[in-house]
Image (cartoon, rainbow, N blue to C red; front, side, top):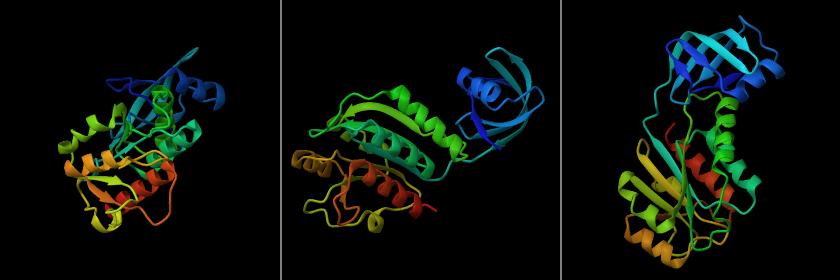
Amino acid sequence: MELFFSNQIVGNLIEMPESEAHHLLNVLRYKIGDELKVTNGKGDFFESKIIEINKKKCVVEIIKIISIDKPKHYISIAIAPTKNRERLEWFFEKATEIGIDEIQLIKTQYSEKSNVAIDRLQKVLLAAIKQSNQAWLPILKPMIDFEKLIHYQNDYQQSFICHNLPPSTIQLIKIAKPHLKTLIMIGPEGGFSNHEIDLASKNKFQTVLLGNNKLRTETAGIIAASILKQINL
């Protein structure tokens, strides 16, 4: 059954957002009485049926609620936006399918791009949880300067910065611990500057490698997400 999204829930009724209502009514041709599955992105699935259709409006009644517990771990990836929009959106889509909890956009010394369309990226996240049948929508945080993010390190139980310069010789998969609130930083194509690496190291970030090859930003992000998710299975 295809999954839909709405956070407009009052009592046992859900009003579908206009975009979802359009897809339901005009593309899929759903009718009153048809059943569908909805998530609020906060851990709940709602087995529902359509009870009202009015032009662009679609209201469904909740039949059953299935709540999905939040995983014990928490994976946050702080990533410098790529110059190419499609590559960044690809990372958002695949990281969401993998099941990370948070994406933090960071502006670094060598960042290729400092402005991104947050609304568009949010839509990518929504589409990805629906496609992968997930009940938890990742948190998307707006752009923040690298040095400011460093000071939020204490919000996490383990923090990493990825780069392939000495003394970074430890593989992430060998040092990351499961079931912890984790932050990992991925730099732009030009990597992190020496100053940024030094600053992170002085603020309890562990320097790690993702492999021996030089990776694109979005590839590094997916590898990091995959490793952290795998050790938490």
